[in-house]
Length: 334
Image (cartoon, rainbow, N blue to C red; front, side, top):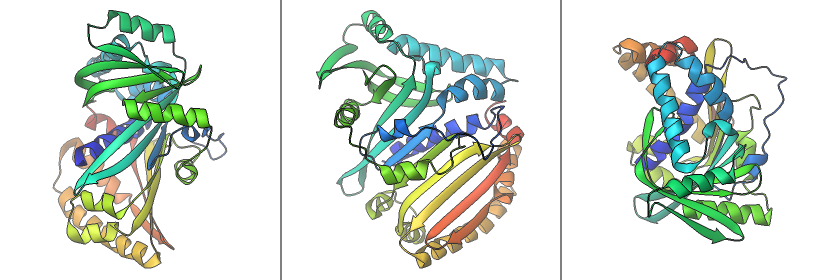
Protein backbone atom coordinates (compact mmCIF):
# COMPACT_ATOMS: atom_id res chain seq x y z
CA UNK A 1 0.00 0.00 0.00
CA UNK A 2 2.77 2.38 0.98
CA UNK A 3 4.47 1.76 -2.34
CA UNK A 4 1.33 2.65 -4.29
CA UNK A 5 0.85 5.86 -2.35
CA UNK A 6 4.51 6.69 -2.82
CA UNK A 7 4.24 6.07 -6.56
CA UNK A 8 1.41 8.57 -6.84
CA UNK A 9 3.28 11.11 -4.75
CA UNK A 10 6.47 10.69 -6.77
CA UNK A 11 4.64 11.34 -10.04
CA UNK A 12 3.04 14.49 -8.68
CA UNK A 13 6.28 15.80 -7.19
CA UNK A 14 8.18 14.96 -10.37
CA UNK A 15 5.68 16.89 -12.48
CA UNK A 16 5.98 19.90 -10.19
CA UNK A 17 9.75 19.81 -9.90
CA UNK A 18 10.34 19.64 -13.64
CA UNK A 19 7.89 22.43 -14.34
CA UNK A 20 9.77 24.71 -11.97
CA UNK A 21 12.27 25.37 -14.72
CA UNK A 22 9.70 26.78 -17.12
CA UNK A 23 10.68 30.05 -18.72
CA UNK A 24 7.37 31.60 -17.82
CA UNK A 25 6.94 33.43 -14.52
CA UNK A 26 3.80 33.49 -12.43
CA UNK A 27 1.66 36.58 -12.24
CA UNK A 28 -1.30 37.20 -9.98
CA UNK A 29 -3.54 38.34 -12.81
CA UNK A 30 -2.99 35.29 -15.01
CA UNK A 31 -6.07 33.57 -16.34
CA UNK A 32 -7.16 30.66 -14.12
CA UNK A 33 -6.58 27.16 -15.39
CA UNK A 34 -9.82 25.54 -16.52
CA UNK A 35 -11.24 23.02 -14.05
CA UNK A 36 -13.41 21.23 -16.60
CA UNK A 37 -11.08 18.25 -16.81
CA UNK A 38 -11.10 17.81 -13.03
CA UNK A 39 -14.89 18.08 -13.05
CA UNK A 40 -15.06 15.15 -15.47
CA UNK A 41 -13.32 12.74 -13.08
CA UNK A 42 -15.37 10.01 -11.40
CA UNK A 43 -15.90 10.22 -7.65
CA UNK A 44 -12.45 10.37 -6.04
CA UNK A 45 -10.70 10.66 -2.70
CA UNK A 46 -7.83 12.65 -4.21
CA UNK A 47 -7.51 14.76 -7.37
CA UNK A 48 -4.51 16.30 -9.12
CA UNK A 49 -4.23 18.61 -12.12
CA UNK A 50 -1.02 19.03 -14.15
CA UNK A 51 -0.13 21.26 -17.11
CA UNK A 52 1.52 18.50 -19.11
CA UNK A 53 2.38 20.22 -22.38
CA UNK A 54 4.42 22.90 -20.63
CA UNK A 55 6.14 20.21 -18.63
CA UNK A 56 7.26 18.17 -21.62
CA UNK A 57 7.87 20.87 -24.22
CA UNK A 58 9.42 23.59 -22.07
CA UNK A 59 10.54 22.31 -18.68
CA UNK A 60 12.35 19.10 -19.51
CA UNK A 61 14.54 20.63 -22.23
CA UNK A 62 15.44 23.42 -19.81
CA UNK A 63 16.25 21.25 -16.81
CA UNK A 64 18.42 18.93 -18.87
CA UNK A 65 19.95 21.60 -21.09
CA UNK A 66 23.43 20.62 -19.88
CA UNK A 67 22.78 16.89 -20.05
CA UNK A 68 21.74 16.01 -23.63
CA UNK A 69 22.24 12.29 -22.96
CA UNK A 70 19.61 12.26 -20.22
CA UNK A 71 17.24 14.36 -22.31
CA UNK A 72 17.69 11.89 -25.17
CA UNK A 73 16.85 9.05 -22.80
CA UNK A 74 13.64 10.78 -21.74
CA UNK A 75 12.61 11.40 -25.35
CA UNK A 76 13.34 7.77 -26.18
CA UNK A 77 11.08 6.58 -23.36
CA UNK A 78 8.30 8.83 -24.64
CA UNK A 79 8.71 7.45 -28.16
CA UNK A 80 8.63 3.89 -26.80
CA UNK A 81 5.35 4.59 -25.03
CA UNK A 82 4.00 6.16 -28.21
CA UNK A 83 4.97 3.10 -30.25
CA UNK A 84 3.37 0.67 -27.79
CA UNK A 85 0.09 2.56 -27.35
CA UNK A 86 -0.24 5.03 -30.22
CA UNK A 87 -0.36 7.88 -27.67
CA UNK A 88 2.08 10.79 -27.69
CA UNK A 89 2.10 12.47 -24.24
CA UNK A 90 3.44 15.64 -25.85
CA UNK A 91 0.11 16.17 -27.59
CA UNK A 92 -1.85 16.59 -24.36
CA UNK A 93 -2.47 20.00 -22.83
CA UNK A 94 -3.46 18.94 -19.32
CA UNK A 95 -3.86 15.83 -17.23
CA UNK A 96 -6.29 15.31 -14.35
CA UNK A 97 -5.73 12.41 -11.97
CA UNK A 98 -8.28 10.85 -9.64
CA UNK A 99 -7.55 8.29 -6.92
CA UNK A 100 -9.98 6.21 -4.91
CA UNK A 101 -8.89 4.47 -1.70
CA UNK A 102 -10.36 1.24 -0.34
CA UNK A 103 -9.48 -0.86 2.69
CA UNK A 104 -10.24 -4.52 1.96
CA UNK A 105 -8.57 -5.79 5.14
CA UNK A 106 -6.66 -4.63 8.21
CA UNK A 107 -3.51 -2.76 7.27
CA UNK A 108 -4.22 -2.96 3.53
CA UNK A 109 -5.05 0.00 1.30
CA UNK A 110 -5.80 -0.33 -2.39
CA UNK A 111 -5.57 2.66 -4.72
CA UNK A 112 -7.60 2.81 -7.93
CA UNK A 113 -6.45 5.58 -10.23
CA UNK A 114 -7.64 7.04 -13.50
CA UNK A 115 -6.24 9.86 -15.61
CA UNK A 116 -8.04 12.15 -18.02
CA UNK A 117 -5.96 13.91 -20.66
CA UNK A 118 -7.19 16.62 -23.02
CA UNK A 119 -5.53 17.63 -26.23
CA UNK A 120 -4.94 16.09 -29.63
CA UNK A 121 -4.99 12.34 -30.08
CA UNK A 122 -5.86 9.99 -32.88
CA UNK A 123 -8.10 6.94 -32.52
CA UNK A 124 -6.52 5.73 -35.76
CA UNK A 125 -3.11 5.80 -34.05
CA UNK A 126 -4.51 3.63 -31.27
CA UNK A 127 -5.72 1.11 -33.82
CA UNK A 128 -2.39 1.20 -35.66
CA UNK A 129 -0.54 0.44 -32.44
CA UNK A 130 -2.92 -2.42 -31.74
CA UNK A 131 -2.30 -3.99 -35.14
CA UNK A 132 1.45 -4.22 -34.58
CA UNK A 133 1.16 -5.38 -30.94
CA UNK A 134 2.36 -8.95 -30.27
CA UNK A 135 -0.32 -11.63 -30.15
CA UNK A 136 -2.17 -11.66 -26.85
CA UNK A 137 -0.93 -8.23 -25.80
CA UNK A 138 -3.94 -6.24 -26.97
CA UNK A 139 -7.70 -6.53 -26.85
CA UNK A 140 -10.79 -4.36 -27.16
CA UNK A 141 -13.73 -4.15 -24.79
CA UNK A 142 -17.09 -2.50 -25.31
CA UNK A 143 -18.67 -0.58 -22.44
CA UNK A 144 -21.62 1.84 -22.53
CA UNK A 145 -21.16 2.35 -26.25
CA UNK A 146 -17.46 3.17 -25.88
CA UNK A 147 -14.45 1.19 -27.04
CA UNK A 148 -11.79 0.48 -24.41
CA UNK A 149 -8.37 -0.37 -25.83
CA UNK A 150 -6.49 -2.61 -23.42
CA UNK A 151 -2.72 -2.98 -23.84
CA UNK A 152 -1.03 -5.76 -21.91
CA UNK A 153 2.36 -4.21 -21.20
CA UNK A 154 3.68 -6.43 -18.37
CA UNK A 155 6.69 -4.22 -17.96
CA UNK A 156 8.19 -1.32 -16.11
CA UNK A 157 7.35 1.95 -17.82
CA UNK A 158 9.77 4.82 -17.33
CA UNK A 159 7.88 7.99 -16.42
CA UNK A 160 9.62 11.03 -17.91
CA UNK A 161 12.71 8.89 -18.35
CA UNK A 162 13.40 8.91 -14.61
CA UNK A 163 11.01 6.77 -12.57
CA UNK A 164 10.12 3.15 -13.31
CA UNK A 165 6.63 1.87 -12.52
CA UNK A 166 5.21 -1.57 -13.11
CA UNK A 167 2.20 -1.58 -15.44
CA UNK A 168 0.49 -4.86 -16.24
CA UNK A 169 -2.41 -3.59 -18.32
CA UNK A 170 -3.19 -0.10 -19.55
CA UNK A 171 -6.78 0.65 -20.54
CA UNK A 172 -7.45 3.61 -22.82
CA UNK A 173 -10.82 5.00 -23.96
CA UNK A 174 -11.69 8.20 -25.87
CA UNK A 175 -14.48 9.97 -23.99
CA UNK A 176 -14.96 12.53 -26.74
CA UNK A 177 -12.94 14.14 -29.51
CA UNK A 178 -10.59 15.86 -27.08
CA UNK A 179 -10.53 13.84 -23.85
CA UNK A 180 -8.95 10.46 -23.23
CA UNK A 181 -9.31 8.25 -20.14
CA UNK A 182 -6.33 6.12 -19.09
CA UNK A 183 -5.81 3.73 -16.20
CA UNK A 184 -6.91 0.30 -15.12
CA UNK A 185 -10.11 -1.14 -16.56
CA UNK A 186 -12.21 -0.35 -13.49
CA UNK A 187 -11.06 3.27 -13.40
CA UNK A 188 -11.68 3.81 -17.10
CA UNK A 189 -15.18 2.34 -16.86
CA UNK A 190 -15.87 4.69 -13.94
CA UNK A 191 -14.72 7.63 -16.09
CA UNK A 192 -17.08 6.53 -18.87
CA UNK A 193 -19.97 6.33 -16.39
CA UNK A 194 -19.14 9.79 -15.07
CA UNK A 195 -19.11 11.23 -18.59
CA UNK A 196 -22.50 9.67 -19.35
CA UNK A 197 -24.19 10.84 -16.16
CA UNK A 198 -22.84 14.39 -16.45
CA UNK A 199 -23.20 14.57 -12.68
CA UNK A 200 -20.37 16.69 -11.29
CA UNK A 201 -18.74 15.29 -8.16
CA UNK A 202 -15.59 16.09 -6.15
CA UNK A 203 -16.59 19.76 -5.86
CA UNK A 204 -14.72 20.29 -2.57
CA UNK A 205 -11.54 18.61 -3.81
CA UNK A 206 -11.63 20.50 -7.11
CA UNK A 207 -11.93 23.78 -5.22
CA UNK A 208 -8.87 22.85 -3.12
CA UNK A 209 -6.82 21.75 -6.12
CA UNK A 210 -7.72 24.97 -7.95
CA UNK A 211 -7.01 27.41 -5.11
CA UNK A 212 -3.99 28.84 -6.92
CA UNK A 213 -4.99 29.43 -10.56
CA UNK A 214 -1.37 30.13 -11.48
CA UNK A 215 -0.04 26.84 -10.14
CA UNK A 216 1.52 24.33 -12.47
CA UNK A 217 0.37 21.47 -10.23
CA UNK A 218 -2.59 21.56 -7.85
CA UNK A 219 -4.03 18.81 -5.71
CA UNK A 220 -6.60 18.10 -3.02
CA UNK A 221 -7.39 14.97 -1.01
CA UNK A 222 -9.67 13.70 1.70
CA UNK A 223 -7.92 12.03 4.63
CA UNK A 224 -9.42 9.36 6.89
CA UNK A 225 -8.19 7.79 10.11
CA UNK A 226 -8.00 4.43 8.36
CA UNK A 227 -5.75 5.84 5.66
CA UNK A 228 -3.36 7.27 8.25
CA UNK A 229 -3.44 4.09 10.30
CA UNK A 230 -2.44 2.00 7.30
CA UNK A 231 0.63 4.17 6.68
CA UNK A 232 2.28 2.40 9.63
CA UNK A 233 4.30 5.41 10.79
CA UNK A 234 5.63 6.62 14.14
CA UNK A 235 2.80 6.42 16.69
CA UNK A 236 2.99 10.01 18.08
CA UNK A 237 3.10 11.46 14.57
CA UNK A 238 0.29 9.14 13.45
CA UNK A 239 -1.82 10.41 16.36
CA UNK A 240 -1.42 14.00 15.15
CA UNK A 241 -2.05 13.07 11.52
CA UNK A 242 -5.18 11.10 12.43
CA UNK A 243 -6.89 14.43 13.18
CA UNK A 244 -6.52 15.54 9.56
CA UNK A 245 -9.52 15.53 7.26
CA UNK A 246 -8.21 17.20 4.08
CA UNK A 247 -4.89 18.14 2.51
CA UNK A 248 -4.25 20.31 -0.52
CA UNK A 249 -1.41 22.15 -2.14
CA UNK A 250 0.27 23.46 -5.24
CA UNK A 251 3.57 23.83 -7.05
CA UNK A 252 4.44 27.04 -8.85
CA UNK A 253 7.37 29.03 -10.12
CA UNK A 254 8.87 32.49 -10.22
CA UNK A 255 11.72 33.60 -12.46
CA UNK A 256 14.22 32.03 -10.06
CA UNK A 257 12.47 29.72 -7.60
CA UNK A 258 10.32 26.66 -7.27
CA UNK A 259 7.55 27.35 -4.75
CA UNK A 260 5.81 24.61 -2.79
CA UNK A 261 2.65 25.04 -0.74
CA UNK A 262 0.97 22.40 1.42
CA UNK A 263 -2.07 22.87 3.65
CA UNK A 264 -3.74 20.45 6.04
CA UNK A 265 -7.21 20.87 7.54
CA UNK A 266 -7.68 19.28 10.96
CA UNK A 267 -10.73 18.53 13.08
CA UNK A 268 -10.31 21.72 15.08
CA UNK A 269 -7.90 24.52 15.91
CA UNK A 270 -6.27 22.60 18.78
CA UNK A 271 -5.49 19.67 16.52
CA UNK A 272 -3.96 21.96 13.89
CA UNK A 273 -1.86 23.71 16.55
CA UNK A 274 -0.59 20.40 17.95
CA UNK A 275 0.40 19.23 14.48
CA UNK A 276 2.13 22.55 13.87
CA UNK A 277 4.14 22.15 17.08
CA UNK A 278 5.16 18.64 16.02
CA UNK A 279 6.32 19.86 12.61
CA UNK A 280 8.26 22.75 14.15
CA UNK A 281 10.08 20.23 16.31
CA UNK A 282 10.83 18.04 13.31
CA UNK A 283 12.07 21.09 11.42
CA UNK A 284 14.56 21.88 14.17
CA UNK A 285 15.65 18.25 14.37
CA UNK A 286 15.96 18.15 10.58
CA UNK A 287 18.41 21.03 10.72
CA UNK A 288 20.86 18.80 12.56
CA UNK A 289 20.72 16.09 9.90
CA UNK A 290 20.63 18.41 6.90
CA UNK A 291 23.81 20.08 8.08
CA UNK A 292 25.61 16.77 7.59
CA UNK A 293 24.36 16.24 4.05
CA UNK A 294 26.68 16.99 1.16
CA UNK A 295 26.43 17.35 -2.60
CA UNK A 296 23.35 18.39 -4.55
CA UNK A 297 20.92 16.81 -2.08
CA UNK A 298 22.49 18.73 0.78
CA UNK A 299 22.29 22.05 -1.07
CA UNK A 300 18.62 21.52 -1.94
CA UNK A 301 17.65 20.27 1.52
CA UNK A 302 19.35 23.18 3.27
CA UNK A 303 17.62 25.68 1.00
CA UNK A 304 14.18 24.08 1.46
CA UNK A 305 14.56 23.97 5.24
CA UNK A 306 15.89 27.52 5.53
CA UNK A 307 12.97 28.91 3.52
CA UNK A 308 10.28 26.81 5.20
CA UNK A 309 7.50 28.56 7.11
CA UNK A 310 4.82 26.80 9.17
CA UNK A 311 1.68 28.78 10.00
CA UNK A 312 -1.49 27.75 11.82
CA UNK A 313 -4.74 29.58 11.07
CA UNK A 314 -7.85 28.29 12.83
CA UNK A 315 -8.06 24.56 11.99
CA UNK A 316 -5.67 24.80 9.03
CA UNK A 317 -1.92 24.25 8.97
CA UNK A 318 0.01 25.81 6.09
CA UNK A 319 3.56 25.01 5.02
CA UNK A 320 5.46 27.00 2.42
CA UNK A 321 8.97 26.75 1.09
CA UNK A 322 10.95 27.76 -1.96
CA UNK A 323 14.18 26.54 -3.52
CA UNK A 324 16.29 28.07 -6.29
CA UNK A 325 15.76 26.44 -9.63
CA UNK A 326 19.51 26.23 -10.12
CA UNK A 327 19.69 23.85 -7.13
CA UNK A 328 17.26 21.38 -8.68
CA UNK A 329 19.14 20.66 -11.91
CA UNK A 330 22.15 18.96 -10.28
CA UNK A 331 19.89 16.74 -8.20
CA UNK A 332 18.07 15.55 -11.31
CA UNK A 333 21.28 14.59 -13.05
CA UNK A 334 22.24 17.90 -14.61
